[in-house]
Image (cartoon, rainbow, N blue to C red; front, side, top):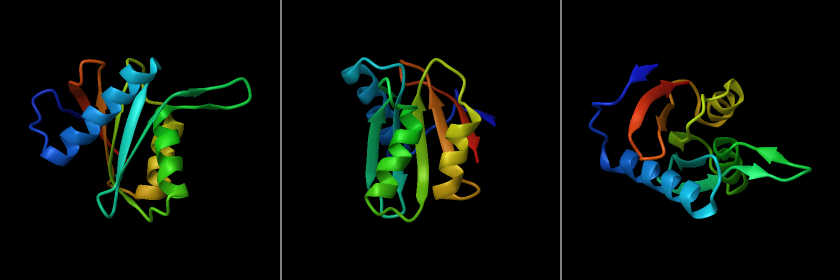
Length: 117
């Protein structure tokens, strides 16, 4: 885990943070997430909270990437006020492999830490 408050993000990482923040705001959900696959495609999702199905935004974005044929992940971002559950990191690890960075940002889009799975 690394404190990223002063981290100067590259444009592609800034893009997934912005997409995650937009998904959270647009859908009025607790979390927004975005992942980037090995080809540079992005998948964006918000929290899913149905009676019969509950998924975090990050697990939903990973599932969307898998369903679209992604073979691995380059990076992930989640915008949330909560702590990141181990299951979210496990989903990124499953598709992205060890070393995949997960940018964790607050609602204002400021990255507060980078977790590496």
